[in-house]
Image 1: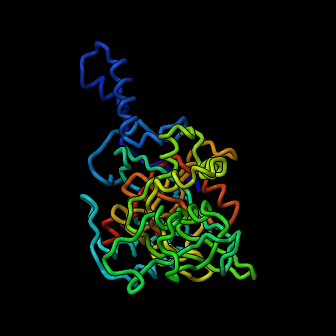
Image 2: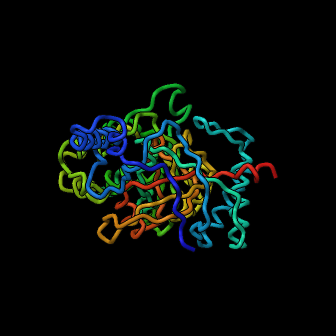
Image 3: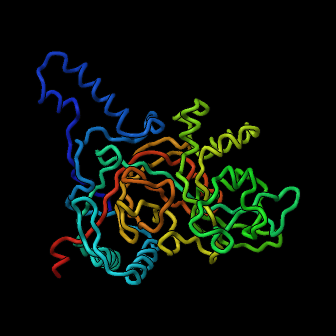
Length: 395
């Protein structure tokens, strides 16, 4: 099936200016306003050529904009249906509640209805699901949402430290090991000053603080011990300090160009500047702790992550357990944007760097191929929260 094209609000800023002011100097003023608006609506680190932003949509004040759902949903593969069933089990386990996001209100049962509608459509593609789409505003209020990627790495570790494997991965300090209501130390204090040494919190030892840092950013990973045993380290909490993007820091310091920014570029910079690793890595005081889990990567909703379908969201604007439609960036082998494609998504995770309506993190899977795909993603797309129609809700 061909993906559908949603009917969004349209109209360029220059058209708006033309209708709103006298003709004299319109072109210059429109271009000036368009440039200023573009520069201020998103973080400067995300301004680069071919970043995928659509500036033709008018701005709006609401967090969500309701739209109809034309025929032609992008038909998913079998893994999506598995993830959808897991998602329904999660929704059935959590307490009944009402969600309120700005002017959009709906009960938990609405999220369950969406999974039922989609499951019926998957089993019988002739069925047209009774669903309506609600586009999220994005940071710029034009519907542009930055799509980054994450993956689960496989990291060699040791049970006990030696000369090479000497950098610990920690579980979260809790009473009585750490006094209740006492602030946890920052990244610099933990990694470089040994604030947690000797507390028995070590889960494994790696050969690189940089590897640890990126494992923190990913939120989970598969570790492989010297005896060949593999374990999954899942998200186990954070230290409560504010998250600061290393990529943004390096862009602002003119160390890496915005257009060339990627996870691989950050790794290379850190490898090329070993004496500055403490200085740069410590600019992000947020620190993630791990817990040992099962063999499959688990998200914040306590669900196995589904490669190419699971996303990390800010639950304050997108509820965990929801199904979304994404118009997502399509990249070539060099990581350059060549277009967008529609894709169904499952909100099953969250992350310290995912805040507000302008950013989602798209799970790519496990291992080296997923690492490359995740590292290239930094472009903009559009996201719609799927909810049942009034007709479906009444039924």
